Length: 418
Image 1 (cartoon, rainbow, N blue to C red):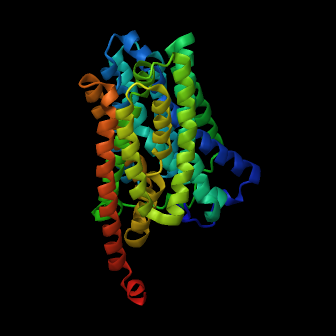
Image 2: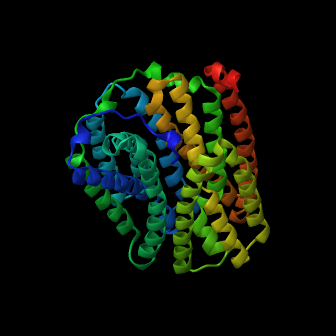
Image 3: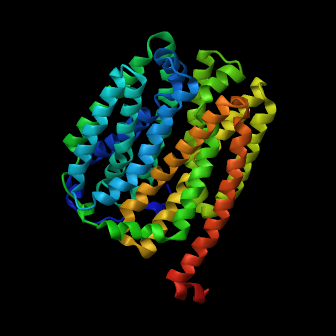
């Protein structure tokens, strides 16, 4: 992430920890991002197996993603606002326990409704769990190194998507899809237990904040417009990506093993997308998203045009992956700047808006993708996603104008001096 997303730091107890323990804490926070990503994306690689095992349609299986995303999107900022008076280590322990219990239920779910219930539980605490964990980074590393560390933690989601979707598909084909859930559970318990053991118990970010002090951030028009960028920008991709495995197998005609290899390559392309997001934000800011969404719209529409032709279809799939996460850092920077400038006590909520908005986009895109699958067919997902990308581009232009207006309002002397 760019430096504009850095969180404030001050001398606190964590800085007095031995360097080896601080490094271990940071490594475990990266692993937390990976574990949370595995829990979220585990179902994507095994959608077909879930449909067969529970006797439901592929469209119904899509609810495993949308149910997770909706609860994640709703509960992440809600918990940030409602728990502002609690100490963060106590919150982290509580979130860790609920997260692990949700994974236990997912691993042993006897029916599809129980599986959905487990996804709701996991999604309810995942965003808050990560948001609390990230607040330890400035104290462990110092302000100058915080942005890169946060970028790596969030980038671990991309790595998780690579591994859990591709390896999960292979495991489900060769053995049993339940083993994918069991592996995710073991990882969740191991990482959570280690974090509780090694993280410092107190620090600077324990300063309380009222709900009103944080919610004031949502009065900023550019923040609301930025959320809409995520809804349509991420939704554009997830109209397709929520059903990528059946697309690769049914439309492009790949085997299960070939689809797993493509998913692995897709995930690596997403890691590059994370790096591009930070690079674009550092050099061009929010303006970088205008050509990004125009290119994404063209790629998605071309996916519709190529139909079942394998080579051009795969090339376009990887093009989608490269655009998938570019939206993140420029919008995070905008949220954080709005908080720093006008609502400094809302930084916790500001850091929660990205996962909230991103998962609203996932839920929206997955739901629309399900309707496309059930209606005209998955081959038409690219055309629908292309339209959403163009809508996202319009919201980028609106956000740029609103951000300029807010800058003139909050810093009139700086604007006049230019």
